[in-house]
Length: 316
Image 1: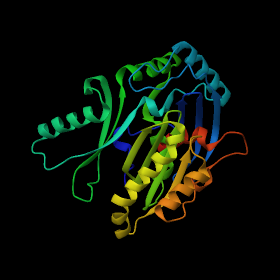
Image 2: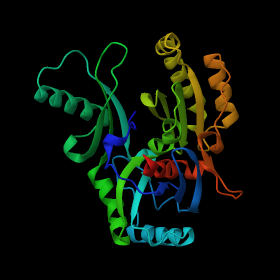
Image 3: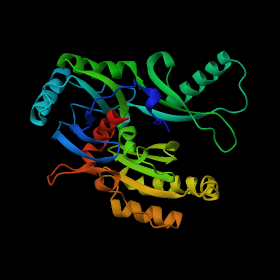
Image 4: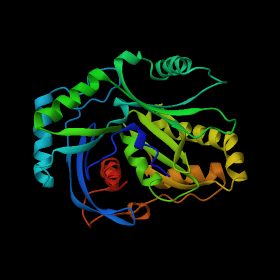
């Protein structure tokens, strides 16, 4: 079965990846392969001034391009990756948007399909398609036989900022995805045939993504205050339980994997909420559970889950 993101990007990917987020930048180079656990050949993470990267879909993200280039040079030196030129990159959650589009009814010609998709994309992203860099791919039809698409977008002006920094360093970023799609690789790269849930938090809220048979089923990006996160997560789980679990159960598929990334949710508390809502004990996956062996160091899985997930695509 092809990787669900393979149609979004070029068919070749490096084993090196960079992850950017407000307050932190991380680099990894993986060793391993599709049939054995991955290990970190090289890795480093560094704190970044909160004012240097200010993630936003609509506004400028980088306050000082040359300063970020200096930070990344120091990080690459620390990681032993200064000579690398080809990278995959995970951008902050707030810098990109991901939507799942469902086509209502039958669409006639190809031109009609493109018009409907354009309308849905502009509604979903809240911007003209002319202002965006968009990647999309078809997904399996839903239970009612409707066509579905996964679409990822970033504003051209925002992408140009990051690409300007990479160009100054002599780097080429062949694969650029939002953080949650990098992290979700640890759920979708293996042979799991059930439903898997990624819960990844950031300063402004969280993204919850459920995958069925390694394909995106539900994606919710929620902007909320810290004290609202648990309630919003609970509402998303209710939506899944009420509208999806009967279909999953009839096919022998239930939510079987939970991965929690970031500091917005305590892992035990997220497991407790999911277990109480769905009526099944939910164990939170660790790095070794998904096939990544971490050295005994201060480098946490949360810090490198996104870039290391993208790096696994080298072995597609």
